[in-house]
Length: 292
Image (cartoon, rainbow, N blue to C red; front, side, top):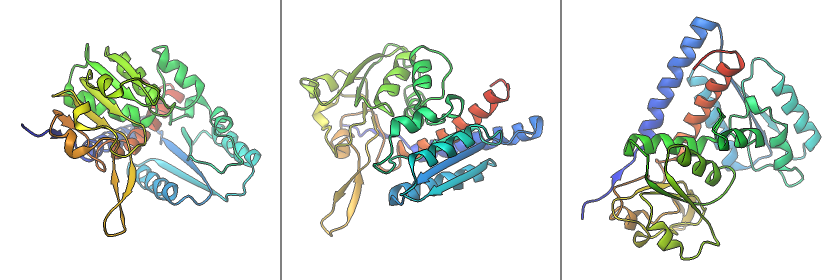
């Protein structure tokens, strides 16, 4: 049996960043506009620190204005909300992103609600979720938006395809399903309470796994020739005592059945920051009345 094609998210993200950089240069030259992104990090979470640093570097590399606000873990929620309000009002900032998780004494829902929907480049506000569900222009969560670009590149016309999304989070599962529905797929959202999950997955022409359980999706869950998008990022121990990254899909089993599959790492992950930059450019244009 032939092996699945490997979907190179790294290469696609590099091309997307090139496009963003060119659009930023055009906005500067034609409109005197420099898109600006502000990222807020509360506390010392190591993974978040790496991610935030990468966001800042890639924002600057694209020619954009970048701000990183690092706050100590003991920052009060009121102080964080005050900063968000200031960034909402700052005309040089077009995208506001608070890096989650935040410390336990803060409410993620309250913080998200404080972000201006027009600057909500993570697509988490109720307003943007509602716009997406209603088919209106919205800033859409970066990871599902990136997954859609990969799918359109690999599959082409998505109309009529049967899609199964495993996971129902506000950040990934729900917006992914909405985007697939908007592309005229027939969509099923599966989750931990789904009966006979393997059988549901075997119906999918497009299978998106976003559950956070390492290598849960096995090869015999996959319809021969399906396209598999693995959003999971999980660390599992190796024999030498170190860890390695794996997805929610058993990659070795799946690639013997699927027609195309994203690897972990190097698949969906690189698309997330590239889409964040693209969302910031979109927000900057909308806030300044510039047509796409």
